Image (cartoon, rainbow, N blue to C red):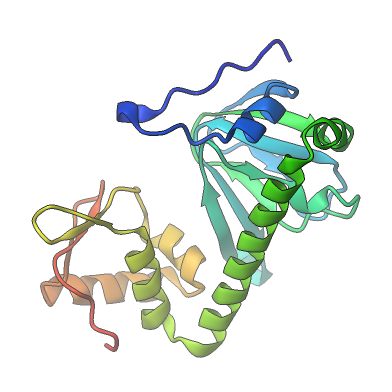
Length: 219
């Protein structure tokens, strides 16, 4: 690739790219994707890593009756596809949620990069461990929490504290997207969200969700 430029951080915030990841990105092939482009298909065999420069990607699986489970939403400074670098099949599908730009790195290129920058191996390992911990947490939540408990856990994780004491989720989320992330039906999410609005706990306007007070642990 002809020299990927480091992505500017918004509002003067620190760059989401570590030096090691930025250096790896510069070795890859730059690709632009339209919204709703399937860039990884679960079950396929591949040896490429997708480093996100712009946009958002969703990792997911489809089950019986087209039921979807979302494993994560990823943005600039993150990457997907690392689970297949052992030569095995892809463990999940990945689709773009908006127009996105990635740099695509092969396993051979990654091995060359690690040989020259061995400290990046620890960075990659740390990322894999964090995602494994998240997968364990999600499996535990699915087994031990009901739909409402999983919804509260997701809203609490996404909410950003505000100066007025409320918390805001800036990510635009449809009820169908929430349902795929907490493992229940869209109808269940719609009912629970409406109940929380009526109770004065949150306000949703389509572009964001404002949590007005602490969400009750049970409903």
